[in-house]
Amino acid sequence: MKLGVTRELPLDVTTALHPYFDEIIVYEKGRPLTENELCEAVRGKDVLICQLTDLISEKVLSHATSLKHLCTFSTGIDHLDLAALKKRGIRISHTPGVLTEATANLSWALILNCARKIKPAETFLKEGRFKGFFPNLFLGLPLELSTLGIVGMGKIGEAVAARAQTFKMKKVLYVSKTSKNIVGATPVTFDELIRLSDVISIHCPLTPETRHLFNDLVFKRMKKNAILVNTARGAIIDEAALTSHLMSHPDFTVGLDVFENEPEVFPGLLSLPNALCVPHIGSASVWAREKMAEICIQDAMRFASGTKLKYEYLYD
Ligand code: DGY
Image 1 (tube, rainbow, N blue to C red):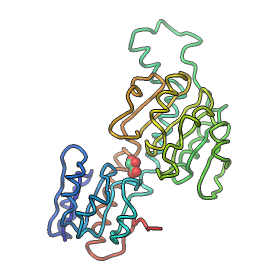
Image 2: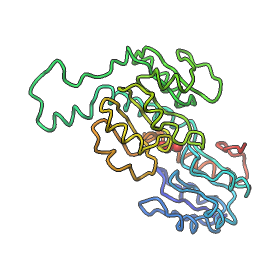
Image 3: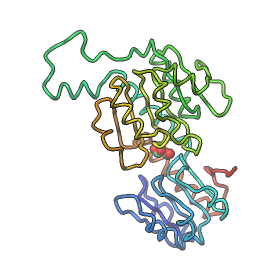
Image 4: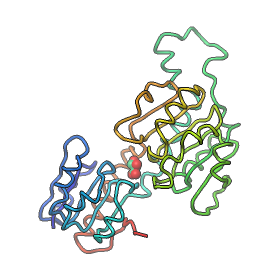
């Protein structure tokens, strides 16, 4: 059996999987593979360990004539053409569960930073503009008097909601596809959520329905001084519309971990004082990333030895 790995993982894949595969090729290039390189990487492989940056498209799969198992080093699966994979009977493993706490913590890091204006305050200080304590300097949002709206109540949404109690937020609202009861949080419609929330945190997957869920019309219905945080997928927000909204509404703030066309960021967005942006590091705790690698390695082992996959994504 042959294994392809599109990038090195935080654990040593080759040593761990050597006993299970006749050939292992790691295509580490210090950057994501191009589509042509991916076509090459899948050729002749039985198993491929890929990244969320690898778009596994119909074109790529047309080169994957022996591929039977795809392990993605991610929880999200929006980079996979599920119909094309299903048609070929290719099984999928992904890494849900292990990045919940890390991602929820980053969401809160962004919320707290935006609420207390840490980024502009630091810039102000570094620019030598601090002339001593001033009663009106960088007044932020009192979280204890504010409403948090959570879009998508999966595991990460729940972990974000749980942390809201620690910060004594006045109210937590949420929208969820499934009818779930969350202690201390109230289910509402999307329209209610965007109108009533002071802080909105996005935790839904990227699907055709959620692409550009946050667009110009939605921004206009949100509070003028709202905080919008996204650690899910960039394309849930229309980044062009967001950039112009931020420009015309200086009190509206965003904390973004993900972007619509990563690694590109919409021109002008990064230099706005009301945009706090980090490079897709939601799951980047040592433990979470090692667990994600362990899941990929162990499910590839299970596949090679014909045992039941533990982290299989089951097609609808
Ligand atoms: C995922 O696994 O989908 C995350 O975006 C990685 O941080």
